[in-house]
Length: 533
Image (tube, rainbow, N blue to C red; front, side, top):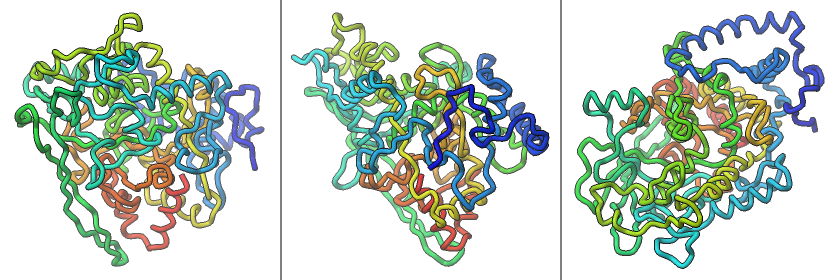
């Protein structure tokens, strides 16, 4: 077996890892047209990008840059796996046995001391919070309104959630509540990125079904499905289930008529630290908001205000790329899902609004001896480290003929127009485990219009009601193993990977139609490829 590339060692020469040397004139001849196109698209993508957000990689030497360009070049050889493809999470890829804990392993390249930090973070991720006041003072502060008592209860086995069913509640899927701007002042606030949208005036930014004793929950999500028949090119019939959402038993009066409901399934936690360390320039290089190359794909970044620094930056986490960092995403989840305050989001009563006065008079869990928040900085440090270092599992069956055929189909049908196969992370990273790693997330982390069928009608920052961030695909083939189900897309409507593909519309319609019109053997092969990720 070939050793995975070690991008952390500057001393290794390009030829030692099978990369073309930059002095090779044929290399630059081959790269010339691609580089010209990249420069053109980057100029288009740079329009509206904040001045402080670099559109070039300043962390790389010219030699490094040549290596990165070479190793991330899209392959045209589908007769065998690419070098280093097995290790889709770089040197931190987990090679542990594949079982229900496949998404819960630590990055393979962290130190022994860091492994202890990871385990402490895991304990906090699994910790059940309790309502105030409590004898367990380091654990109280739950709610008063909440969706779950622990991070792990939503991110089941650090994996994918599931929509509510007859025997399951909405533990790992919730409803975002929001509306767009309604006057000039609100439009100005959105333009200045002070907010990403406006919460319901009574129920806040998401529906909390649970509450501490003495307080009632806000209501219960209801999902109704209708079946839609789709006939593929060879006559095969596939039934897609189309969901509609409402809220039953509203506890505090009606929702604002302008409030939209957006279901959000909890996504897998693997590889987040690597995603955080992709250079902004490399993501922006794939943006083409004006579709200047004419391919029908017009991915664009969601520029958001980093609530930690106050600066405008690239959103890369969440279904609509609304969060700039793992720490911010964790703080938002603590406040919105569990009702726990952090230094980053100091909401001691979680998502309670001024209209919910009974909620605001209840005690909170702040312990001054521990800090000014219910989850003080040491807690956030550990949870963030844990979330940053959940390993991506190694690929499986990547050299099987059917998987290689499926990979060719994935490329030729145009799936990689949004699901970008490879990146190389930054050299300088807070944790060395994520530094200069070749990774295979299969995402461009940009917003794309996915058509009316998947639209939720809810604006989030610069993301419109029909735009979604391209989700990474690594680990998608282990969904059933880890979570015991196969629910896909932002609301779990798709019960198979085939259904998920057939729901693609908007910019991805051409790729979807190519899949629908392909021979059964080619469709099956593409699914086998996805299952190997």
